Length: 262
Ligand code: PEP
Ligand code: MN
Image (cartoon, rainbow, N blue to C red; front, top):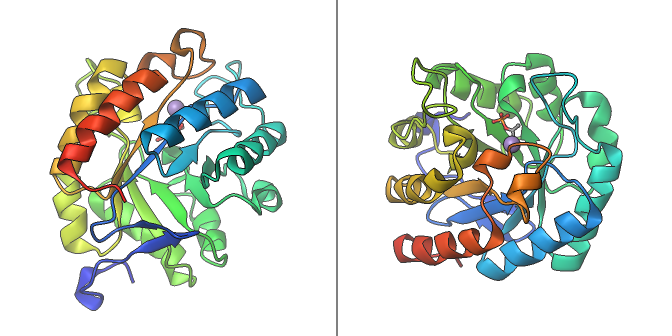
């Protein structure tokens, strides 16, 4: 179902009237984690003013260490919904386990994180629901494995899948991951699904987000997902890759030269 051969036209995913795919380029922005009402509302207002179409924020966080901040959980989801009410921005947030699904009723796009890309039980369950899924590429997943995971969701009947490249593991450790820009033409040739790039996790370095966002849009990505924090140095998660709302505004001004953000 994800295969271009059986579906020549680009898919357009409609999230409450916000389109992604086939020339509809969208920016998803927000903090790695929701940390407080003040934080999420301030960031949501700022990214909206700069032209972001979606608000991202983690409530359930897949952290490497069990002793690191694990996210605010259900309270974080409530704050995201409050930010949605305040700004009208649709919400993108990660589901880590199917038991959390009942809490996600008003979430607009469910993120499947890199670590769950091959959680086939979960993918099958998400295939039965009627909600867009942002599927992140696994840390070491090949293109075929990535597309097969999309296929797992689509096979169940849910064809609203957005592919997200977030950097892959290589020998290089100067950056957090290695951004595989070549996946944009490749995924778009093999599949009709929208492709979004996450330059924040791909590089792990705040000052690289702008150039990699430009590169992604120039290469034909249908969007970028960028981590923005009002106080990056105090962020509870991924502060090194977070940019400030001012920096985000500057990036949006630049990106608008490369694509139309309607
Ligand atoms: C995230 O988007 O905050 C995240 C945890 O991403 P990934 O699953 O790509 O590591
Ligand atoms: Mn993060």
